[in-house]
Length: 263
Image 1: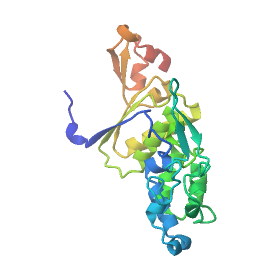
Image 2: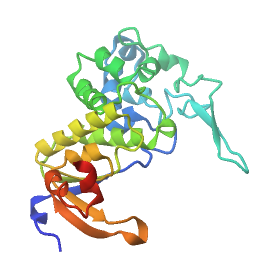
Image 3: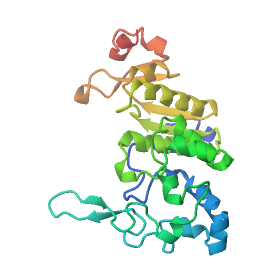
């Protein structure tokens, strides 16, 4: 039985599954920052002169995209006995758009060049646009400043996809009543990135939300408010609640392997 459900409005699982299955999916589209970026290009003098609307700068619909690759920048080659492979489109050379669309520039950059920017570069480039800046800041905050704005979803690791999802949640208006569930978010992360992740999780908690993390990383466990230690062994020898409490409490339980390493 779960008590206190009246204090929550939703539960969100932030896992390491892909943010998309094709190169058209990327951090810019997933987080929603691409919409205001397209608004910026639509408002330029060149776009108005040519009669280009917002849809012209989308690679999901006909008009401004490269039709050879349908705006993916890559073409999939299906292999009979191996995994399918993606090769760069030889018409647009990975730029996703046709030449007419690429003639429109903002501050000397066309839409394809903006998508090629890293998150940190784009953050500086769009400093005069608060709506764009706010979404990019959350991506940088979770340690993705090095990632290209338009990096295809098919090239992201599980950990990177998870942090894109985390940044998306951070950029949304907080209700303070959300439960977030993360399954081993530190997998494959450098200890510096683990530190960044902890800061982000604490931000979610400070907004009144609850964060449940399934984790073996001791740094995450030490920074938790409450620990449920399952064990005592793995597999058939586990699955039982060994002990519960604050990390300092767990450290004093002799029967807890986790507690022994928390000392």
